[in-house]
Length: 332
Length: 305
Image: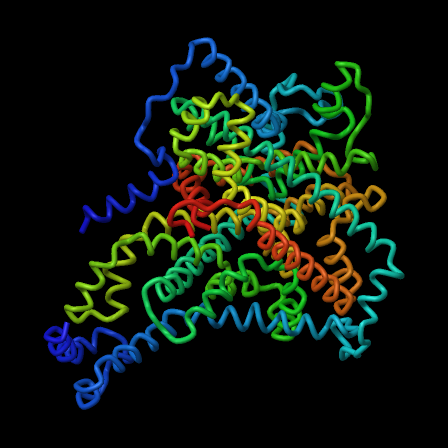
């Protein structure tokens, strides 16, 4: 190391023109505190490489977050200066805005019912695919496809047509004697329909589950079998614990993503959030308040409530994960 | 060099796609069980892909058939819907919307790759002051609901008079604001043995040289994954252009689709379906060509997160 550093310092100067300007340094400092020079060079290189991200992080994320936090305590309509109103927006939200309360309720319903169903479907199908290697790649791809396009406007349009009165779903159900008419205008069925759209996109968590399942050592199952465990016992005592880290990851990501459903609700309800506010999901209501009514203070307050809710959920999941997430080997 | 590249690339895909443990003797499956397995999964596939296949055939139905024929196959095949939509809507030809979407997607990919690869290199291979804190902050933004920043961002871009330009849609991509991609590349770089950059360092190569001639060639699979995800994300993005793009001639496809979909102006279902389907075609092609990369990307993300 010591012998090499000498030649390094020398070569570096000759290499400087091809490198960044940051690399040029006077030979005097290059000789003695080599370690320091290297650290400094690393520091500079680190920040040079990080520059775009830093600009984005402060300019487009942290800065705007601070602005949004400030605006949440004001009335602001984009054209006149914001006026400070203290906690008014937050108080109004929970006491004087039934539309907000309803929006929170349907969003929670959508997240709390939809996410577990989606993950259960993902895990169930992943286990089926894991049963056999041959041929499973085809199915895995087919099931993954909806995850890529599920959030698109095209799919929302198709979904609405599929579940409309006289649409394919309705006629199929009618033919087996279930007459419900269209789902889209039906106050009770629109959320199940939206949940089905989310569940349809089970492919992404399924791929993650499948990769996790392939890492479960087969010996554990064999040992369980020797102990006389049946399929249910094996699932509970081997599969679930071995997959708990992956379940945790999927649960966290899918929950947070579900809170942010927007495009499909917008398209299916033509931006209205109807029928009767049943697709007025949190982010759609936030959008309408902020950009249609230009109540940007109020919308910012709504956004911060969402951030807090997501933070709390993340925190709870992380805290409780110690009790049920089981890490193996060097996975920490 | 090329050997290592192959190995890393292989490993990357293999991590996700092959069993981690060498193929083990599994209990023998009977032919009947395998047949049941196959049939059940085929049934699932039918259900999962039904909406897409239904859409495809719906684009060939005559306008009289909607509401009359909910079945998949049209009674009379017609290309009318496609012929109709070529002219576009609101005085803008359909190709223009495609062009706009393509422009946004391509520049999103370029911006994301450059900025994310740089940030990932800094986090994975350079030691600098404040690294831990910044890395934690970056991971934090992974979970941040982005609705908290759309209002202030809109205000900023409005004050800068950048509304109805593509700047608000593209700027963030050039500044690596999507932490997921930075994270994905970091994970990938961490799998590359350090020996080579150490050797290069001893030979006097600085960080830029190590980045360009060692790391970049080796992380190509991760870059491909990021590129495809970025392309698809940009192609599907609805909220961004909904906020920032006002003139129809600048509309990308999802916003143009909203015009077709607007039932108040008496929408033409056939035309709407045709454009919906055309908008999905590039994604489906990407998916069919690059599915291994996509699935490997999703899987590794989950396993190491």
